[in-house]
Amino acid sequence: QNEETVGKFIKESSQPLFERLMSIYESKDNIPYATRRGDFLYNFWRDETHVRGVWRRTSLEEYRKSNPEWEILVDVDQLCKEENKSWVWRGTQVPDLGGG
Image (cartoon, rainbow, N blue to C red; front, side, top):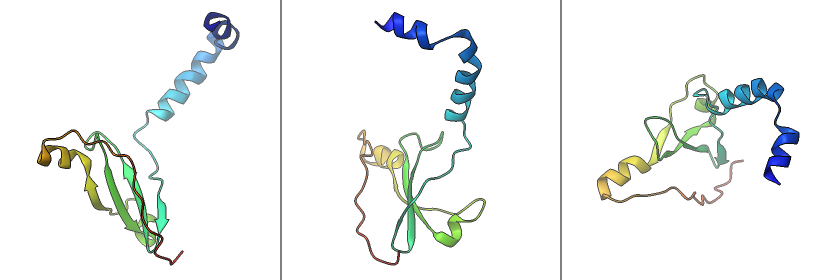
């Protein structure tokens, strides 16, 4: 069944589109999507420096800048080193503090 599906949908002509989409997906120029809670915008971020990720926050005013400053709340990579454990980020629950 897989071969039949691949044969119908994967064509040589789709390779340029596939490569373009992969380049976008793997781009280092990611936009930091943030969730607003109270006066802050929160974001979980991964990059080459923070392989496991950092949970961070910034103000709306700062977020609007081309290169905003972020306050790191949890650095999962650093936590792994300090506690000699393999931590994995599973998300967070932040109470709605109003203001938005």
